[in-house]
Image 1 (cartoon, rainbow, N blue to C red):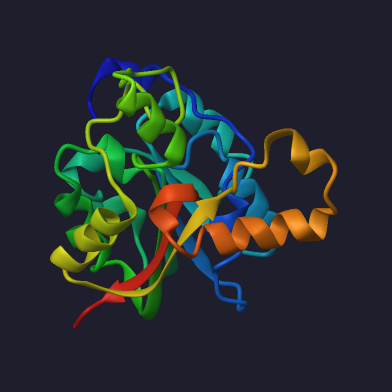
Image 2 (image 1 turned 180 degrees about the vertical axis):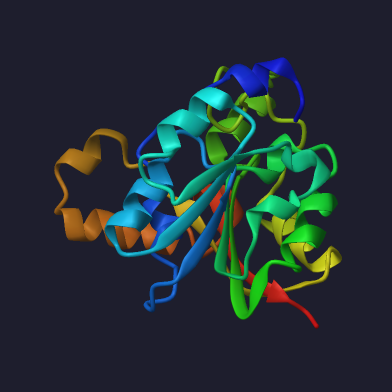
Amino acid sequence: MADSRVSEKVYQNLGNPPLLALFPGERGRVLDCGCGAGDNAQILHARGWKVTGITLSSAEQRAAAAFCERVVLANLEAGLPDSVGGPFDVVLMSHVLEHLVAPENLLDAVKTVLAPDGILAVALPNVLYYPVRLGALFGKFEYTVDGIMDETHVRFYTFETGGQLLRKNGYRVLSARGDGAFPLWKLRRLLPDSWVRRLNRLACRAPPGLFGRQSLYLARPAE
């Protein structure tokens, strides 16, 4: 994660509402690992959460500061710096672990800052999402500037291997689900929104690794 492409890149988007929707109802403290420009922190801050962010980018640190109590500048490849403090009710990792050569360092360190009933919330891009599968079928497997094939990703995960990563590193997976959409194409415009949402939910349940663009997990340390 020390690659200059990562430290100089500013990740800015609409946050990850599907993952944040899985948070417990009671507000508390969040450690946002790989907080980017503060898009998730902005949503959480508006809901009453107190957010501490961590990023490798000084530009992201400045942007996220508007929505965080503080933003720590650190390389997550080495785990967590002592300065993050704790304990935290939720540790958030939204599209972070795929950037790490040794994700076990961070996953191990998180156990030391989670509150006794704290939750780890993880989102991972699903490399077996159906457009990527189709591309590979026709011989296309190329990096892009962002998305599932982001050029700064050093690891690829499926719905199954994402859960395996957490369990292998001492976590009990409380829930796992895919988040994506069924390929309706132009038909999507003709159907009621409620039908489209239902189809998307059903498609991401069986099998979640086909139509889920991202895999979402809630976990706790197994011990």
